[in-house]
Amino acid sequence: MANPSLAIKVRVLASLTRLVAVLLVPIAVCRAPGRARFLACQWALGLRFPAEDLRGLAPETLAAFMHARTEAFWRDGQLIGLTSGYRDAAEQYRLFTEEVWRTGSVSAARRRVLPPEESSHVRGLALDVRPTEGARWLERHGGRYGLYRVYDNEWWHFEYRTVEPVRLPHPDARVR
Image (cartoon, rainbow, N blue to C red; front, side, top):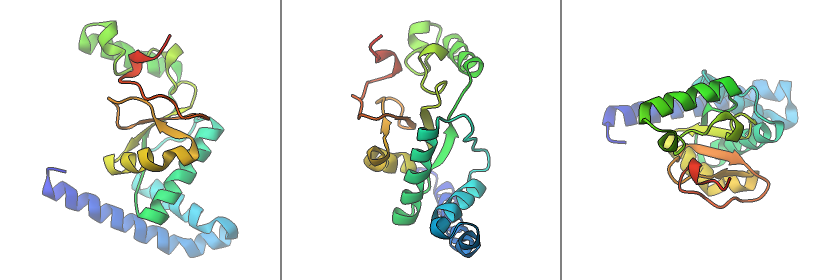
């Protein structure tokens, strides 16, 4: 991180999130005794990343993501937030057409955004995560949960898969 004040802010927020999670464990024990740490983690991360929207994710993708980020949180102190998950076809189409307009061509746009009929976001299987350290953790350990980085040019994009995929240079490199 090039900006020292931003780096400090990120570290302080991460420390506060961990503190909140620890303080929430006793309350979580009352709510779900066998899953208190899991629940406290989800509550704390929900406070840290309030704009997250986990709705629409396929059940297996949601479960994998929640369990992976809980392990990252408690085992390694790493926070993983969701920037974008499920997108309906209209939203995906909007993003694709904006990218076509921005880049000037369908071919160039497809290197970053796929049309709805090809996007794993529309099926609830794709996750765009943050921060970069969280993505690095997920790249190293996500396979245990079926979460894989699938494109070289998108450090933030992971997909739920039952078998590890071959990593592609960009989304348009998919075999059609």
